[in-house]
Image (cartoon, rainbow, N blue to C red; front, side):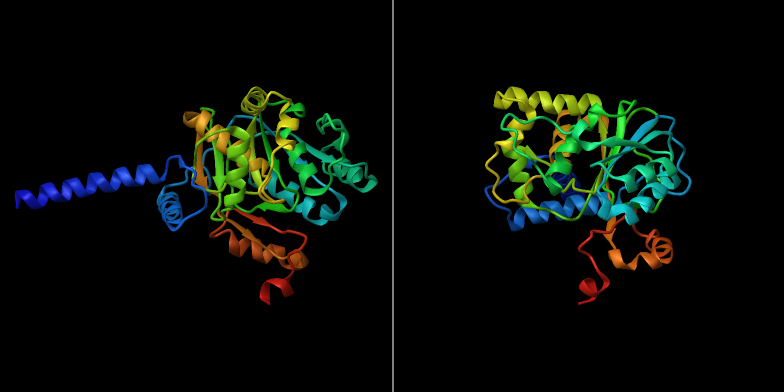
Length: 314
Protein backbone atom coordinates (compact mmCIF):
# COMPACT_ATOMS: atom_id res chain seq x y z
CA UNK A 1 0.00 0.00 0.00
CA UNK A 2 2.85 2.35 0.85
CA UNK A 3 4.39 1.68 -2.56
CA UNK A 4 1.05 2.48 -4.25
CA UNK A 5 0.71 5.86 -2.53
CA UNK A 6 4.32 6.72 -3.28
CA UNK A 7 3.82 5.86 -6.97
CA UNK A 8 0.63 7.92 -7.06
CA UNK A 9 2.45 10.87 -5.49
CA UNK A 10 5.29 10.66 -8.01
CA UNK A 11 2.78 10.42 -10.88
CA UNK A 12 0.88 13.47 -9.61
CA UNK A 13 4.05 15.53 -9.24
CA UNK A 14 5.19 14.47 -12.72
CA UNK A 15 1.81 15.47 -14.15
CA UNK A 16 1.96 18.91 -12.52
CA UNK A 17 5.50 19.44 -13.82
CA UNK A 18 4.37 18.50 -17.33
CA UNK A 19 1.44 20.94 -17.14
CA UNK A 20 3.82 23.71 -16.08
CA UNK A 21 6.17 22.81 -18.93
CA UNK A 22 3.35 22.88 -21.49
CA UNK A 23 2.16 26.29 -20.24
CA UNK A 24 5.57 27.98 -20.38
CA UNK A 25 7.71 29.04 -23.35
CA UNK A 26 9.36 26.16 -25.19
CA UNK A 27 11.89 25.94 -28.02
CA UNK A 28 10.36 26.71 -31.39
CA UNK A 29 10.99 23.70 -33.68
CA UNK A 30 11.81 23.91 -37.37
CA UNK A 31 8.20 23.02 -38.12
CA UNK A 32 5.03 22.43 -36.16
CA UNK A 33 4.66 18.86 -34.93
CA UNK A 34 2.17 16.51 -33.30
CA UNK A 35 4.10 16.94 -30.06
CA UNK A 36 3.81 20.74 -30.23
CA UNK A 37 0.11 20.37 -30.97
CA UNK A 38 -0.26 18.14 -27.93
CA UNK A 39 1.50 20.68 -25.72
CA UNK A 40 -0.74 23.38 -27.15
CA UNK A 41 -3.82 21.29 -26.41
CA UNK A 42 -2.69 20.86 -22.79
CA UNK A 43 -2.19 24.62 -22.46
CA UNK A 44 -5.61 25.40 -23.90
CA UNK A 45 -7.30 22.85 -21.63
CA UNK A 46 -5.56 24.40 -18.65
CA UNK A 47 -6.75 27.87 -19.63
CA UNK A 48 -10.26 26.57 -20.27
CA UNK A 49 -10.63 25.16 -16.74
CA UNK A 50 -8.70 27.98 -15.12
CA UNK A 51 -11.04 30.59 -13.59
CA UNK A 52 -11.20 33.86 -15.54
CA UNK A 53 -11.82 36.55 -12.90
CA UNK A 54 -11.53 39.27 -15.54
CA UNK A 55 -14.68 38.49 -17.53
CA UNK A 56 -18.11 37.84 -16.03
CA UNK A 57 -21.20 39.67 -14.86
CA UNK A 58 -20.07 40.42 -11.31
CA UNK A 59 -16.38 41.31 -11.64
CA UNK A 60 -15.33 44.44 -9.77
CA UNK A 61 -14.82 47.55 -11.87
CA UNK A 62 -11.18 48.46 -12.45
CA UNK A 63 -10.24 52.05 -11.70
CA UNK A 64 -7.29 52.07 -14.11
CA UNK A 65 -8.12 54.37 -17.05
CA UNK A 66 -7.39 53.25 -20.60
CA UNK A 67 -7.70 54.69 -24.07
CA UNK A 68 -9.38 52.80 -26.89
CA UNK A 69 -7.71 52.94 -30.31
CA UNK A 70 -9.47 51.65 -33.44
CA UNK A 71 -7.74 51.73 -36.84
CA UNK A 72 -10.52 51.81 -39.41
CA UNK A 73 -11.39 52.39 -43.07
CA UNK A 74 -14.77 53.17 -44.63
CA UNK A 75 -15.67 49.58 -45.55
CA UNK A 76 -15.89 48.79 -41.82
CA UNK A 77 -18.28 51.61 -40.91
CA UNK A 78 -21.20 49.28 -40.08
CA UNK A 79 -19.15 47.13 -37.73
CA UNK A 80 -17.29 50.14 -36.33
CA UNK A 81 -20.50 51.46 -34.77
CA UNK A 82 -20.95 48.11 -33.01
CA UNK A 83 -17.31 48.06 -31.92
CA UNK A 84 -17.64 51.46 -30.24
CA UNK A 85 -20.95 50.61 -28.58
CA UNK A 86 -19.75 47.23 -27.36
CA UNK A 87 -16.60 48.69 -25.84
CA UNK A 88 -18.50 51.32 -23.89
CA UNK A 89 -21.02 48.70 -22.73
CA UNK A 90 -18.65 45.91 -21.77
CA UNK A 91 -15.33 47.40 -20.67
CA UNK A 92 -15.63 47.79 -16.91
CA UNK A 93 -13.01 50.47 -16.44
CA UNK A 94 -12.77 54.14 -17.40
CA UNK A 95 -12.25 54.84 -21.11
CA UNK A 96 -10.67 58.28 -21.31
CA UNK A 97 -10.85 58.66 -25.08
CA UNK A 98 -11.73 56.61 -28.15
CA UNK A 99 -9.47 57.33 -31.12
CA UNK A 100 -10.40 56.43 -34.69
CA UNK A 101 -7.21 56.21 -36.76
CA UNK A 102 -8.18 56.44 -40.40
CA UNK A 103 -7.42 57.90 -43.83
CA UNK A 104 -9.18 61.17 -44.62
CA UNK A 105 -12.91 60.45 -44.66
CA UNK A 106 -15.88 62.74 -44.24
CA UNK A 107 -18.03 59.80 -43.14
CA UNK A 108 -15.58 58.64 -40.47
CA UNK A 109 -15.09 62.19 -39.21
CA UNK A 110 -18.86 62.46 -38.88
CA UNK A 111 -19.05 59.22 -36.91
CA UNK A 112 -16.23 60.37 -34.64
CA UNK A 113 -18.13 63.58 -33.88
CA UNK A 114 -21.47 61.81 -33.35
CA UNK A 115 -20.00 59.10 -31.10
CA UNK A 116 -17.79 61.46 -29.09
CA UNK A 117 -14.58 59.95 -30.46
CA UNK A 118 -11.39 61.63 -31.64
CA UNK A 119 -10.54 61.35 -35.34
CA UNK A 120 -6.80 60.90 -36.01
CA UNK A 121 -5.44 61.04 -39.53
CA UNK A 122 -3.48 57.82 -40.07
CA UNK A 123 -0.57 59.56 -41.81
CA UNK A 124 0.22 61.35 -38.55
CA UNK A 125 0.61 58.01 -36.78
CA UNK A 126 2.26 55.90 -39.47
CA UNK A 127 6.02 55.45 -38.92
CA UNK A 128 8.57 56.67 -41.47
CA UNK A 129 10.56 54.03 -43.36
CA UNK A 130 14.02 54.62 -44.79
CA UNK A 131 12.98 53.41 -48.27
CA UNK A 132 9.84 55.59 -48.25
CA UNK A 133 7.88 52.73 -49.82
CA UNK A 134 4.11 53.01 -49.35
CA UNK A 135 2.33 50.35 -47.33
CA UNK A 136 -1.32 49.57 -47.86
CA UNK A 137 -4.10 47.42 -46.47
CA UNK A 138 -3.60 45.02 -43.59
CA UNK A 139 0.16 45.57 -43.30
CA UNK A 140 -0.35 49.33 -42.94
CA UNK A 141 -2.89 48.81 -40.16
CA UNK A 142 -0.44 46.59 -38.28
CA UNK A 143 2.26 49.25 -38.35
CA UNK A 144 -0.30 51.80 -37.20
CA UNK A 145 -1.08 49.64 -34.17
CA UNK A 146 2.61 49.22 -33.33
CA UNK A 147 2.99 53.01 -33.39
CA UNK A 148 -0.17 53.70 -31.38
CA UNK A 149 1.89 54.66 -28.34
CA UNK A 150 2.16 58.07 -30.03
CA UNK A 151 -1.60 58.51 -29.49
CA UNK A 152 -3.64 58.83 -26.32
CA UNK A 153 -3.26 60.11 -22.79
CA UNK A 154 -2.94 56.94 -20.71
CA UNK A 155 -0.19 54.42 -20.09
CA UNK A 156 -2.54 51.61 -21.15
CA UNK A 157 -4.57 51.49 -24.34
CA UNK A 158 -6.73 48.83 -25.93
CA UNK A 159 -6.28 48.25 -29.66
CA UNK A 160 -9.43 46.90 -31.29
CA UNK A 161 -10.01 45.81 -34.86
CA UNK A 162 -12.97 47.68 -36.34
CA UNK A 163 -14.73 44.41 -37.18
CA UNK A 164 -14.64 43.01 -33.63
CA UNK A 165 -17.18 43.55 -30.86
CA UNK A 166 -17.09 42.61 -27.19
CA UNK A 167 -20.12 40.65 -26.03
CA UNK A 168 -19.36 40.06 -22.34
CA UNK A 169 -18.33 42.44 -19.51
CA UNK A 170 -14.58 42.40 -18.96
CA UNK A 171 -11.57 44.34 -17.78
CA UNK A 172 -8.13 44.58 -19.37
CA UNK A 173 -6.04 46.09 -16.56
CA UNK A 174 -6.63 45.18 -12.93
CA UNK A 175 -6.42 47.66 -10.09
CA UNK A 176 -2.97 46.30 -9.24
CA UNK A 177 -1.92 46.95 -12.89
CA UNK A 178 -1.96 43.33 -14.06
CA UNK A 179 -2.46 43.41 -17.84
CA UNK A 180 -4.80 40.85 -19.44
CA UNK A 181 -3.79 39.22 -22.73
CA UNK A 182 -6.38 37.13 -24.56
CA UNK A 183 -5.24 34.16 -26.63
CA UNK A 184 -7.13 32.07 -29.19
CA UNK A 185 -7.35 28.46 -30.33
CA UNK A 186 -6.13 29.50 -33.78
CA UNK A 187 -2.44 28.90 -34.41
CA UNK A 188 -0.23 30.05 -37.28
CA UNK A 189 3.25 28.56 -37.12
CA UNK A 190 4.55 30.99 -39.76
CA UNK A 191 3.76 33.88 -37.42
CA UNK A 192 5.90 32.31 -34.70
CA UNK A 193 8.70 32.09 -37.26
CA UNK A 194 8.26 35.80 -37.97
CA UNK A 195 8.43 36.63 -34.27
CA UNK A 196 11.55 34.47 -33.85
CA UNK A 197 13.26 36.37 -36.66
CA UNK A 198 12.16 39.71 -35.24
CA UNK A 199 12.90 39.18 -31.55
CA UNK A 200 15.76 36.70 -31.67
CA UNK A 201 14.14 34.61 -28.93
CA UNK A 202 14.59 30.83 -28.92
CA UNK A 203 11.56 29.99 -26.76
CA UNK A 204 7.94 30.93 -27.34
CA UNK A 205 4.54 30.47 -25.77
CA UNK A 206 2.92 27.70 -27.79
CA UNK A 207 -0.35 29.63 -28.19
CA UNK A 208 -1.80 32.29 -30.48
CA UNK A 209 -2.01 35.95 -29.42
CA UNK A 210 -3.92 37.11 -32.52
CA UNK A 211 -7.16 37.84 -30.68
CA UNK A 212 -8.37 40.79 -32.84
CA UNK A 213 -7.81 43.14 -29.89
CA UNK A 214 -4.97 43.63 -27.45
CA UNK A 215 -4.23 45.63 -24.34
CA UNK A 216 -0.93 47.46 -24.76
CA UNK A 217 1.29 49.47 -22.47
CA UNK A 218 3.24 52.45 -23.77
CA UNK A 219 6.22 51.47 -21.61
CA UNK A 220 6.24 47.89 -22.88
CA UNK A 221 5.68 48.89 -26.50
CA UNK A 222 8.63 51.29 -26.28
CA UNK A 223 10.70 48.46 -24.76
CA UNK A 224 9.75 46.25 -27.72
CA UNK A 225 10.83 48.91 -30.20
CA UNK A 226 14.11 49.45 -28.35
CA UNK A 227 14.77 45.71 -28.42
CA UNK A 228 14.17 45.58 -32.19
CA UNK A 229 16.41 48.58 -32.79
CA UNK A 230 19.29 47.24 -30.69
CA UNK A 231 19.04 43.71 -32.09
CA UNK A 232 18.89 44.69 -35.77
CA UNK A 233 20.88 47.93 -35.70
CA UNK A 234 18.17 49.98 -37.40
CA UNK A 235 14.87 51.64 -36.56
CA UNK A 236 12.19 49.25 -35.31
CA UNK A 237 10.03 49.76 -38.39
CA UNK A 238 12.94 49.17 -40.78
CA UNK A 239 13.93 46.10 -38.74
CA UNK A 240 10.48 44.59 -39.20
CA UNK A 241 10.27 45.70 -42.82
CA UNK A 242 13.55 43.95 -43.67
CA UNK A 243 12.54 40.52 -42.33
CA UNK A 244 12.62 37.70 -44.87
CA UNK A 245 9.17 36.40 -43.98
CA UNK A 246 8.28 32.78 -44.75
CA UNK A 247 4.84 33.80 -46.05
CA UNK A 248 3.07 37.03 -46.95
CA UNK A 249 0.59 36.61 -44.09
CA UNK A 250 3.29 35.83 -41.50
CA UNK A 251 3.37 39.36 -40.08
CA UNK A 252 1.38 39.80 -36.88
CA UNK A 253 1.58 42.80 -34.60
CA UNK A 254 -0.39 40.99 -31.90
CA UNK A 255 1.92 37.97 -31.96
CA UNK A 256 4.97 40.24 -31.84
CA UNK A 257 3.78 42.28 -28.87
CA UNK A 258 2.16 39.36 -27.01
CA UNK A 259 5.22 37.11 -27.21
CA UNK A 260 7.54 39.94 -26.19
CA UNK A 261 5.68 41.07 -23.07
CA UNK A 262 4.73 37.53 -21.99
CA UNK A 263 8.43 36.67 -21.80
CA UNK A 264 9.99 39.97 -20.79
CA UNK A 265 7.33 40.96 -18.24
CA UNK A 266 5.81 37.61 -17.14
CA UNK A 267 4.80 38.85 -13.68
CA UNK A 268 2.92 41.83 -15.10
CA UNK A 269 0.63 40.03 -17.55
CA UNK A 270 -2.04 37.36 -17.29
CA UNK A 271 -2.85 34.98 -20.15
CA UNK A 272 -6.52 34.06 -20.45
CA UNK A 273 -8.58 32.28 -23.09
CA UNK A 274 -9.97 34.82 -25.54
CA UNK A 275 -13.07 32.84 -26.59
CA UNK A 276 -13.60 34.73 -29.85
CA UNK A 277 -16.00 33.56 -32.55
CA UNK A 278 -16.63 34.65 -36.14
CA UNK A 279 -19.93 36.00 -37.45
CA UNK A 280 -21.00 36.72 -41.04
CA UNK A 281 -20.84 40.38 -42.03
CA UNK A 282 -24.12 40.17 -43.97
CA UNK A 283 -25.88 38.86 -40.86
CA UNK A 284 -25.74 42.21 -39.06
CA UNK A 285 -29.55 42.50 -39.06
CA UNK A 286 -29.62 39.63 -36.55
CA UNK A 287 -26.65 40.74 -34.48
CA UNK A 288 -28.74 41.47 -31.39
CA UNK A 289 -30.09 37.93 -31.11
CA UNK A 290 -26.74 36.39 -32.02
CA UNK A 291 -24.84 38.49 -29.48
CA UNK A 292 -27.18 37.50 -26.65
CA UNK A 293 -26.97 33.81 -27.55
CA UNK A 294 -23.22 33.68 -28.18
CA UNK A 295 -22.31 35.66 -25.05
CA UNK A 296 -23.05 32.53 -23.00
CA UNK A 297 -19.88 31.01 -24.41
CA UNK A 298 -17.79 33.70 -26.09
CA UNK A 299 -16.21 37.01 -25.06
CA UNK A 300 -16.02 38.65 -28.48
CA UNK A 301 -17.18 38.32 -32.09
CA UNK A 302 -15.30 39.16 -35.26
CA UNK A 303 -17.04 39.98 -38.54
CA UNK A 304 -14.44 39.94 -41.32
CA UNK A 305 -15.56 41.59 -44.55
CA UNK A 306 -15.09 38.32 -46.45
CA UNK A 307 -17.32 36.33 -44.09
CA UNK A 308 -20.87 35.79 -45.39
CA UNK A 309 -23.73 33.56 -44.32
CA UNK A 310 -23.52 31.77 -47.67
CA UNK A 311 -19.80 31.17 -47.30
CA UNK A 312 -20.07 29.88 -43.75
CA UNK A 313 -22.96 27.54 -44.48
CA UNK A 314 -21.45 26.24 -47.64
